Image (cartoon, rainbow, N blue to C red):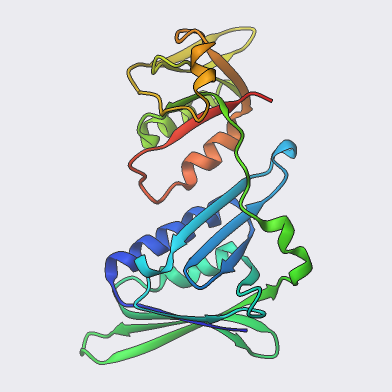
Length: 258
């Protein structure tokens, strides 16, 4: 197995760092999948037990000026690595204003993802900072548990308001209750609501818009004003909102009918 890549564009490096920071805030460990044309960051906790599941896909040509890899075999041309999310995030934090960032799979008595950062000093001479991030190579027999998840048809799907605004509201609500009710309909309306024995607080959003549903039947048989609701742990939602570093142009929330 071989892997080496290089980033030289400041915007690409900044976006790659933001993705890493987001993942570090969501989970302690993650899986990095390396293939000839993509990098994937994978979180595969059991959602039913309160964990976070994520499939993050980065087209390598959009980030790297150089990218070379050889997988475990010609038939299975991929590499799966388990690493501590915070270790990668910390290494990339030192890459601000870097001229060049190189990432390489190495073996220094144990498998490592070696991150080399070339920085300019005040005297215009360069210096290199190197981080060796321990990784665990995931064997081929376990790859089947780390595939892109299939997403069922949504019962209701809605575009979210600006995530920073939503985070500010949820932060205030967590002081009142441990659970949050999210209500949404096909009319672009979203409610964030908490209910206790003493108080009921609701924040309303309108005209958010709805993405097209995969199944046309879902919208035909559902009243557009009828609210679908879910009850979630407010701390889990806040963890997600606080971890967002990538400034998405759009974010959606969907309720699935099982």
